[in-house]
Amino acid sequence: MPPWNSPSLQQTLPRFVLYASMADLISLNRSILTPTETKQLGVRMNELTDRALARFRQAVRAVYKVDDRNLPDHEGSCILLDIYGVKVLLTAAHIVDVNVDQDRTLCITGEKDLVELDKLQFGLSPKIKGSRVGDHFDFAFARIPPALEARLGQGYVTEGDIMDPRLDITGHLFTTIGYPNSKNDDFDHVNRTVNTHVFPYSSTARSNALLRKKVGEDGVHHLFVGYDKYSRGQDGRKVTSIKPRGLSGGALIDAGRMSNPGVFWGKIDPVPRVAGMIVELWRDHKVLVSTRMWPIVQKAIEELNISVPPGC
Image (cartoon, rainbow, N blue to C red):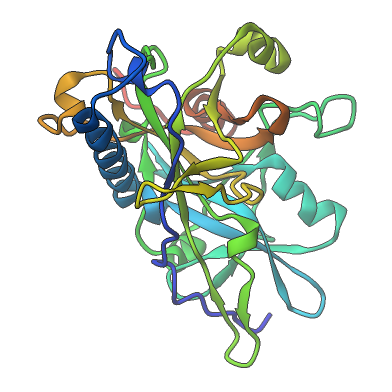
């Protein structure tokens, strides 16, 4: 198909953060913060969000579906992985289903233009009774061939960038990185250009028996991050949250443990790690659901026959 250029990979929407149970976040045995603590809370959440975005923004790309008229329509997000030297594309399985169910060509933003994915062979999490609705793992991965890799440019998540699944996430701040549909419908049909806008959103992890039961296996392979109707913009004001549709396939980043006083007061800068891939919004529970990254990587290693170095 004639190329669609994507020169604006770097455009970033204002960051949003969700203030919830923050007294617990910073290990205070009080429900009210002092003015100094409240100010530092907002400053530090924004700083850690920016650090997470700076580290992984190039590894998270926008996904489009292109119809038979060669017109792009934004569909979701994806993550570029480098697993022990093997380049892998990861996205949500329900996005790949679009390619089959609607007879559309999937593309992602490359270094200079939209890159077609129609030649990739995806391994997908299994549907439940023939439907993707009950599949809470919802992942799809494919090996990236050299010709495609050359068009994608720099920016991959390596196995060393992934959060340790044994980590106690109490008091941690999480940042989502992805491309919402409502902010990625900017097309210049004359110049054949798409303008992408990446969206960072930060909140804390949530978990309860009902959430864990809903995903199965006691929730050990999933993370739940608060996503409410209202959040705080980068200036601290209360705003209506951007609709998250389109974040599916994007990355969930562990931005650091803010309950550590050194982290909270800016004396320690934690290293951001990729914790999972966003799969869906549960509006009734006010959470974004993410599949943890390690189970996906382990499945990719198995199905793509990736060699793991001794001792890893």
